[in-house]
Structure formats: C-alpha cells, structure tokens
Image 1: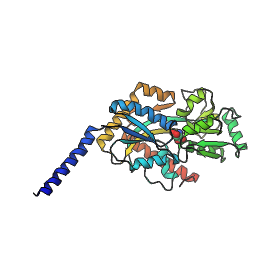
Image 2: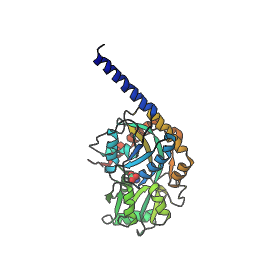
Image 3: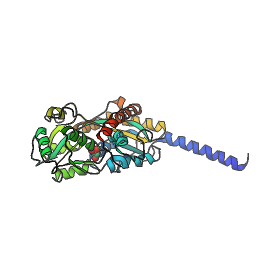
Image 4: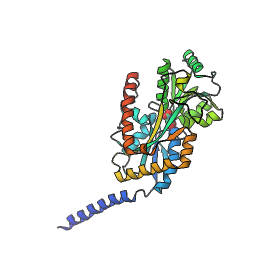
Length: 325
Ligand code: ASP
C-alpha cells in the first residue's frame, strides 16, 4: 500500500470516528432554537420557556434566535438549510402545516426537509380588541365590523401565521372581508393593539392573558371547543355567536433533515423531561398553553400529526383561494 493510500485511509477513519464522536458527545456546545416570529410573541414565549428548561437535561445552554417574516417561512427556510448537527433547532406552530398550501413558491418541504422531534403544547386563541373598542360582546363586535368594514382593521403575523388563519376563519364565518395589517409576529402587533393603532386580532392566550387580566385590552371569546380554566368567564366562539368556529394551535420542535437519530432521540428525551418540569407546566398553564402528554412529545407522534394537519388544512385553504408568493 502506497503512503498516499495509507494517509487517505487514516483520514477516512479519523473522519468516521469524528462523526460518531460528535453524535456520542452531543451536545458539547450551545444549541440555538430558531423561532420564525418576532421576540415577545407567543411562539417566542413558548420557545424561550422550553429552551431554559431543556438546558438542564441537555447540560448545555439552549438559546433562541428570532428569524421573523413571511408568516414563519423565512425562519423555516433558514433551518431547512442549516447543518444537520443538532445545534440548530426549530420551534414552529400550526403554520408549518399550512405553509405548503398558502405559499406558491415555498423553497422547502415541512416533511422532507425537517426531522420531527416532538409536539410541545396545545394552545387557545382569543379574540381581543383595543381597550376602547366600542362593543362589549362578540355579537356586537360582528355587527360593528360588518357595518364598518372599511374602517376597522385586523392585525396578524403575516400569511400562514396562526393569527392569519384565525382571522381567515373569522372573515369566512361572518362573510365579510376586512382590512388586515400584517406584522412579523404578534408581539409587535400586540404593542400596536395596546397603543390603539389597530382595532382587533385573534391571538394565542400566551400573548393576550396578562394584558386581558390587567384590563389593557378587551376579550370577547376563546377559539377552543371548551372554555379555558385560566379565564372561565370568557365564552367560546361557538357559545358567543359563531357555531362553527373552533381552532387550537400547536407548537412543535424540529431539526434539519439528516440530523443523526441518536441526536434526535437525545433531544426528544430532553423535550419530554422539560415538559415534566413543574415550573414549565405551571408557566405554560398560566398562559393557557398546555404542554402535551409524554407520548406526543415524540418524533413519531409529531410526524403523524404534521401529516394529518397538512391533509386537513390544504383543501380548506385551496377552497378559500388564499395564497402568497
Ligand atoms: N402568534 C403569532 C401567530 O399569529 C406568531 C407569533 O408571534 O408567535 O402565528
């Protein structure tokens, strides 16, 4: 064997050992979770609480980076291109399942470009309005926006966001098109709602609960099939006047496609451990976002759920004729 061939062989063996070593030593540096919406909004809050809690079982720092815009698709595209080494992860909500139907030029596939790690939580949306919006009940609000459809506006986090979908359902149910104002996340949208620059929005309780409790915004209904323990006095949409309106938002954790299975297993176990943490459970529950049961915080459960949601929303969105480039 010539020296050149021998050196190549040694090199190949070292590389192989290195790859296995990486998976075996994982994690050995900071892990970044990309959130595809602005800081301060629901996805950001869910991800930051999770990141802090996962740091303990993973014995490394887990941080959040916001890569916002285009209803979450800019952040998703970034993660799809990231090295599959377990150091770049992704937290996204229901919008990951609706993007393929909404975006005609999506550069990635939620199924083939990501490794599922597990579901994180289920959450409710709330229909909320600025403090001085001149109506007190959902029925009054519907009558008011129908009569003033050129004057009122509805904030959302861009095409494909949960607030966009919730708004679409609302406009379909009341058979009225309204002016919508897109933001890079409902964190900044909430600032404008608090400041009275926009009229109303439908957003996760994660973002609305503290402002509702402080009397800084008005709440009209929750979107879940049942009322919420965190605000039992608030009716559901179907109790308050929209019999067909039901929407639950879920968040999940992913890695780029090709991330080694041992790394995915380590992350999934850390996610399950984090969801058992009493402090995280309490924080999520105060925000109206229930952490999922252990058997749903798994790659298999998320893979199946993502597919079910893509199959469910695709035809609804196509029928509504809504899309973005
Ligand atoms: N809650 C937002 C949405 O409407 C996104 C966010 O800022 O988390 O999808």
